[in-house]
Amino acid sequence: MAEQEITLMKGNEAIAHAAIRCGCDGYFGYPITPQSEVLETLAEQKPWETTGMVVLQAESETSSINMVYGGAGCGKKVMTSSSSPGISLMQEGLSYMAGCEIPCLVVNVSRGGPGLGTIQPSQADYFQSCKGGGHGDYHLIVLAPSSVQETADFVDLAFELAFKYRNPAMILSDGVIGQMMEKVVLPPFKPRRTEEQILKECPWAATGRPKTRQPNVITSLELDPAKMEEINIRIQKKYAQIQENEVRFEEFMLEDAEYAICAFGSAARIAKKAIEDARKEGIKVGLLRPITLWPFPYKEIEALSHKVKGILSLEINAGQMVEDIRLAVNGRIPVNHYGRLGGIIPAPDEVVGELKKMMK
Image (cartoon, rainbow, N blue to C red; front, side):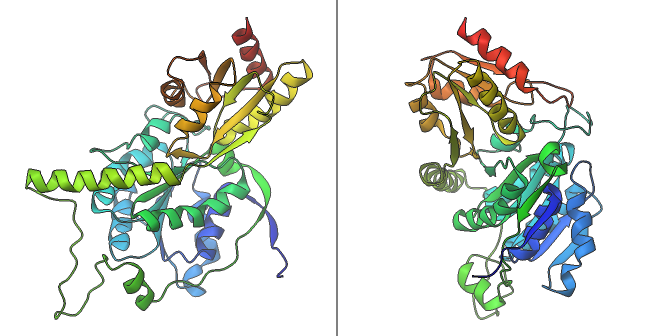
């Protein structure tokens, strides 16, 4: 067995290294705090000299997402990264790619808003990421890492899911995970696919086939309402399949829990410390951490609502995921929200205090 390669790096750096190692064909991005290290690390590593991966700083976020659109339409494994306002600028392109049913990876290292807001961490991009964000009835596959290790692991997983379902995927990180340093086991190198492999794996792609064959046309445009409805129905069936097969979540100390916290990403790390502190005071509480924010673990939270007396949604925002938790619970038990805004991170003792309020 090959010796594991363990190193200390930021979450943003781990994304860059994982992209190179998983056989990514191209990265097109634009700097914005707190995710700029993704592009900086790729430029430093110069993968075009080793794996042939293209790395390009575009003129803007709008340009970068449309470069991803072009590369993805050719069946290439391509990606971009940005932070909240930059992701807003990419929404039209993401909607187009969802409509075309082509795979790509977008990394969002989110910061506070609305507007330019702050460069400090936030989880206020939940709606923008998990509810489509752009126009039309579409979803992104959304993975939320809570460690640098998961940030690295999810790059390959996101590409795998994106190509499996021909759908854009997003890694929803935040300024905490992106900037913090932890040890990480980097994934093994995968070779980039050959043109022959792309032709075989992506028969839908526009790859410049000979004139003797009917070329593929990548478009989301359909002017016939009946045909457009057929396309939408087919896409919705695909989403139902994703919801059935790809839900991922973590349970922590829920075996005897009387109350539960739901949290994702960096907030889940805070929740675990709060749970440990609360249990020292005799409060039986556990954590359900959604790893896929879409598809969301509705069934698992609904089942949890039959076992606990209340759920606290811990988010670094004004309350977004809490709406999905309430949909899952359907009024069966109380569901409260606690979060901080402006880039302020909730402290574990604050979370314990909120749990005590629920118990009164």
